Image (tube, rainbow, N blue to C red; front, top):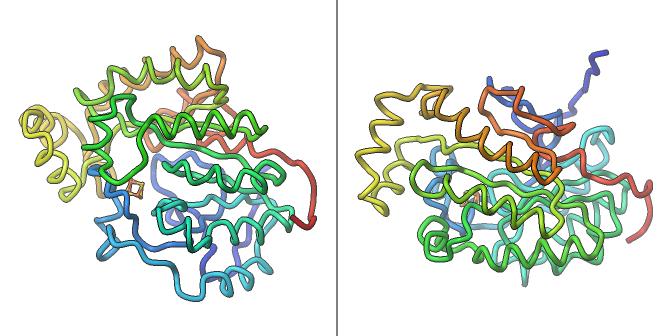
Length: 303
Ligand code: SF4
């Protein structure tokens, strides 16, 4: 049976992917970002293509007031994904606590939340996260500290992200990991080892995808890794395909890269999903994004 979701006009809580990207297999959900822009400055980031001054982080104006207003209109069947075009735990969050206060507002209403971050600051909120209907997904692209520093200059190190996952799992928070984007030659080979590491910590679901090139993120990437420029240029701009506004790797290559990760994920008995790849048959979990892990601990309560 097809379920119809009527989405009321809201201000900071918005429907995720309202234009329904051709390859998106996500379940209907909301998106919420307490901040505009992102300070992590990942080379491959796509937000610079559509958010002005995207690497300058700023809190949303009147965020909590608008959030409370929006929460009166949300459809409780849909979960809220925090965040998709910024990290909800930038360094400033340690002092501002916008994400923490948003979680208190949302989780105390018994609504369901998936946190997506690259930051270990999320552990500060384990007291409310572990009691609410909430799962956490941490993105890890590589175990190589120096590669991570180049790829994601201001994000916490892979070691810190793994420790954060360990702590969250210990505290009973259902966790998934995003192993993406896979960039041929840079981090695709070690994804298999990364999956083993994540499985040993107790992560339950892996979501993976290949790097999608846009002119600005491609320029940042090849400026930092000039030794890969020729190969990547050929793969993306000559042999690859255009999907929406991005350049993709050739389809057969993407499938092969993702299948390798999927096989490793299967070996550890985790579930797997791919993000905007056009291979829904590779998904083995109830959802591609891991939102099936969000627990239904209880209804409205006071946290
Ligand atoms: S964490 Fe995400 S939103 Fe922030 S810079 Fe990196 S890719 Fe972009």
